[in-house]
Image (cartoon, rainbow, N blue to C red):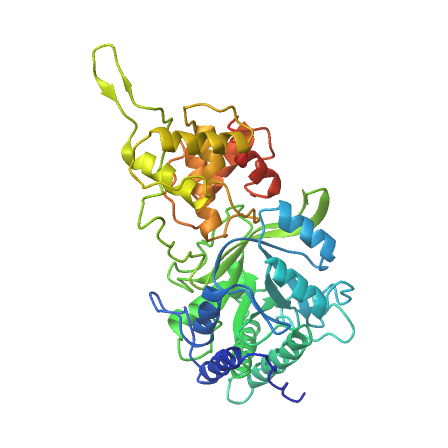
Length: 483
């Protein structure tokens, strides 16, 4: 097959990024295969564009998946766009594996999978994981699946270099890239090869499989893509890890691995390989096999995955508010006007918290005075106006419910494990106001600390504890619902 041409893009900046990806890949730079190594080569490119927006959607093409830590699922048949939108709005998943290439895949016919489908899902926010299931290990008993399907050639050859398997891997990568380009999946994307479990004690079977994967990675790098490999933790992944440590110069190793280990643990750990392999940022784990899940009334049979790719999920620094006023607290208690106790002691609300309140009200154009920290008449006028406009009874007290309504105010995007940005900060602050037990550190990243706090709040207010913050959740947060 002739080599596919480069994707034409609309912006010079994107062309430059693609050129950088291609040149880095051609130089053979590998990423994330040495403990502590910073991302380099095509993986560095994926990390860089992921920091801008991930997945990248530009000029009708997609670069995926970028930097991400969170949940994903894979399913043989790509669901239709309506199902994908429903799951985006209701499920905890943000990534989806799709079988785009390979004669050994069970779902050769993909009626929903098209360039338009890819663009729609990436625009919605899905991080796509394009999968190829082509020639399998020679000792894999379940393949070949079809009459025109072939296994990896296990013959070592005269030089014992398994060059025929190597060439097969290169050819499969070239076919996959052509299929990816036809779907609008551009350079810089990670393409995953599905190598099903096999008997790794069979020398010719193992060595030919490793040579095949080496050819796969070599060719992907030359074509400007990032290489990923899915396999069983105990066979293909363990063999790759042994090669990484024992024969580092023998094979070109993938940039990322997708570990099949159905231990029910949503992480990237497995005892089958060393802890330093493909870390940081080069691992996924399929931690649960085929099962049905229903979200938003839509049922799909899936495998469950946990991803930790690139730099993971990060958030840009938040812009200063009101000249550097502190906004984030681990608790937002009741505020009330100054009062004098019977013993003559004067009690005043914390001026720092009052200043936070004044700043937030100013942002919403309810307060135009100086940020004095004084809970006086001008502040009370603003708080009463906010209460009235939000359907609360007007009162001098500023409760946790009032804090929630003010802290949650703004856009209402879908948030779930792996989301980041200012909306996550608003969520974290609102949860701290909702419960004094939350005590979340406001980072702007929806991670392992946020998920249980969201689920706990959802359970207390009578919602399904999915961990997903959708429009229904935002509405309740804006109303100050606590139980």
